[in-house]
Amino acid sequence: MLIECDNVSVHIGKRSILSQINLSVNEKEIITVLGPNGSGKTTLFKTFIGALEPSFGSIKKKPNLKIGYVPQRLYIDETLPITVTRFMNLPSRYSSDKIETALGHAGVPGLGKQQIQDLSGGQFQRVLLARALLGKPDLLLLDEATQGLDHRGSADFYRQIAHVRETLGCAVVMISHELHVVMRQTDRVICLNGHICCQGKPETVSGSPEYHSLFGLDKDSEAALYLHQNHHKHSHS
Image (cartoon, rainbow, N blue to C red; front, side, top):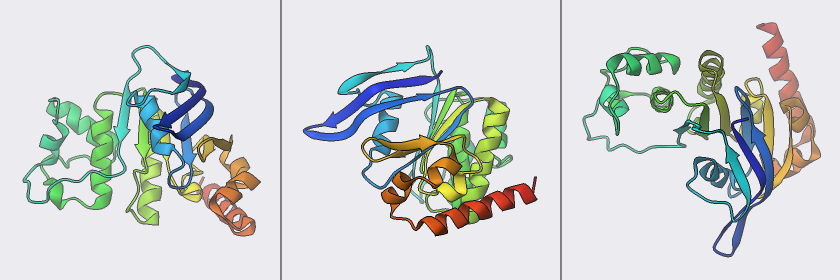
């Protein structure tokens, strides 16, 4: 077990952000956290990282746990001439071999000499992923890392995440709004709205009343999406 939250609540000022969170993250597991804006997803990540302390409850972490983090977005001044390699060396320097290996794991080998401002959105997100992998994390956190990518770009990125898990053996917790896109790459889904509304395997959560209530979805259309995704998966396996 990498992280265990025991009855964790987080208050900021007088406002309750998270209430009675009980969950664990196990080695090599991929977990997707779903929830509307303001549901506490990013706050949960901050408690994992240690940037926020629980107001109540406790978090236990594996000793010397290494965490890699891919942010939702990162703004870089477009007028700043900086190569991918130089960007990867901020704030710590790494050997060119380690950088190239990380870029390879992220699915963008050979990009080291490219200017950051010349990358596509998808390439830049993979460079952020590679940067998070440089420290060889036990746990990789992704905060809506595919925001701004189209459907195909998102699906490709999540496939790469599954490959990273298989290759490097790290656990992954990712925030997403796209259950139908991530469900083939995730082991467990957690629906969050200040508290854990429901959790379980993707096919279980996608059919749960709590999930449909949380996102205001039409059950038939979501079920059809799931069946389509599963048919697509089996037809390519």
